[in-house]
Image (cartoon, rainbow, N blue to C red; front, side, top):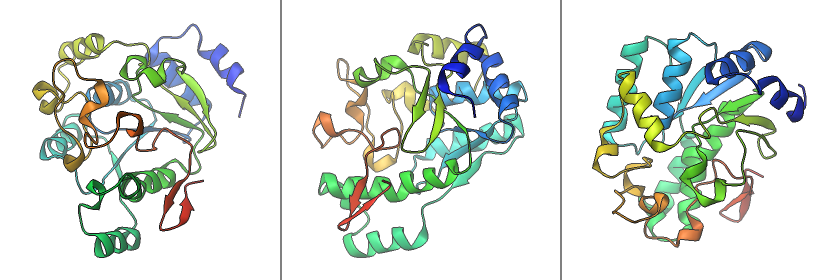
Length: 244
């Protein structure tokens, strides 16, 4: 695989669709896109599917998603008639956690919540990414102050691949306009104050003036509100470091 600087140079003068096509052709069968069926991900799914770009689309089926999310998932399959691959938690890890701590242990401590995120999302994600070269995501720069120093193309040390954020510089208004102009199915929870939609027990609507991430794990300190999907640190579960 070429280095990051070479890939950036090759993508420099291309538009969004051309960039996705270029990466899919340069790394055939090695480019994968993760969707959680939010605004950004639905826009990228449309870019991929409507242009028949050979990029595998997958999602993390945590078992705790909103009914509205399942509706969008199913309608997306119907509209494009293309597969979206689901990755589930490992049965034994999930069963052990629930049997030991109950189904809602994540409310009790940050450690328990990180354990739940690891089992339901991070471990399945690692399986999904294994063997791939490029991970396409729906990350946008304005979603978090922590992302201001990021770029649309970056090296993911934890997963040992390149991450590409095709709509990184889009504003939310641009995303919403694209959704409307292309008649793309989207999650109606967005219309009810949900800028970010994850697992149902861990996501609430955001009030006017609140931070973008305020609706995720609202019972925790603001500084701790990351699940680890886009972080490289290991997560400690039952005294063992996982995901290092």
